[in-house]
Length: 273
Image 1 (cartoon, rainbow, N blue to C red):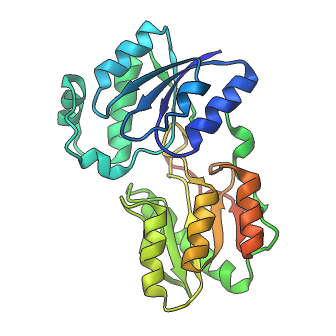
Image 2 (cartoon, rainbow, N blue to C red):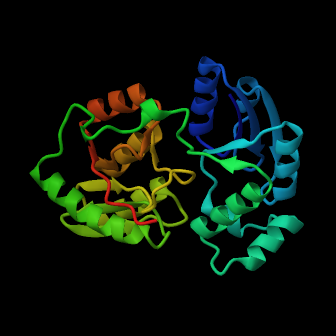
Image 3 (cartoon, one colour):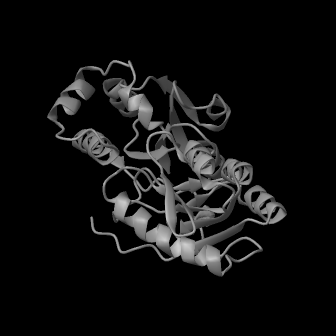
């Protein structure tokens, strides 16, 4: 099978390319210069580089490589959307047509442009299904009663916010929401929460968007998540089972177990769109 893969930052695109090699898939990687690691060059069947904003160049590459199936893997920091990077004519036209400039509207618009060109956006976890979080306790320690109460409260808050395309994570302590993830990302949200926690244990709750598809913006946790949790005094991580990627799982769980951090998967709230 031949895929195109738009590579953002983090381990997600690296692991997807490694798995594609094992499965014998040919993957044409298109690295985002402002985000992706040079590691993708050695792992991809072919590799090209584009800057954010170069939608026309992306389409030209995919057509030249005869790619019809495209995966998005890795994060593009939301603040990049508001950077000084200039969009090409095709992206500028799309941006002008959007009523809102949030992630769903922007990437949904890009997906429509690609579809019109015969390029189909596919489930971004298609190569990494074994890395999706299971339901129930994942690390050695289960959440205790206080943590479970905070997690239940946090999941109500996070699922309500997810529909507004604000962020996917909240930091909770003693049934109070200390911080909501926005454009700064999970690590910085946790550090902000720690400045308000006054020594109280923080619970990190991550949920998936309230949509049926997993084409983009799939929640991810990895060893860096555990490092930041340990740094900020967060004691439990709650994720949506079957809709959250646990990257470098063995390392993640070893670090969580050593730090006594509980990691648990929960049934996702019903998606609406």
